[in-house]
Image (tube, rainbow, N blue to C red; front, side, top):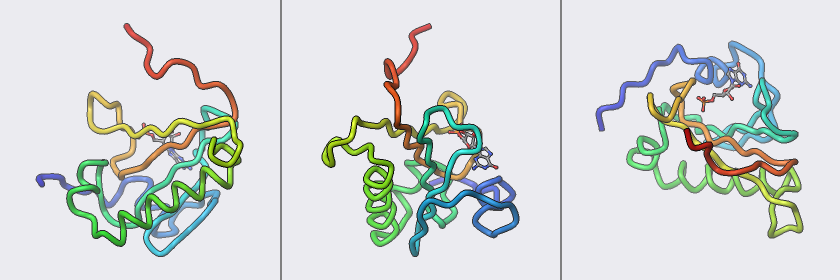
Length: 126
Ligand code: 5GP
């Protein structure tokens, strides 16, 4: 895969402890922290600790252990925020953006977990 990882991106700096973050959960391979500009009452970013640029990069090149750990962390975040419909919550949305058309701002793979209000239609058509 021809991805090139920029280790000066803001999430790489967060992982190195160079800038602070509001951590919700940390595991061996994964970090979950609050978005600095939340778009919903709950807005958590889940990122792998490894150097992956986007979802497809992560899925293609991460180890099984990293992939399992990431998704178990997502499940835990949905539970911790009270958003999981399986736990009686009112639901959430998971979003990941990639590249130019996806309007990805930070080139380190991250999954947005948004919850705490009705989130409206999936996309605006325009
Ligand atoms: P993207 O557009 O790449 O999918 O989303 C990047 C997200 O990172 C945005 O929602 C933005 O608010 C968030 N973000 C950007 N810089 C920082 C930061 O320094 N700390 C935290 N916690 N979130 C950030």
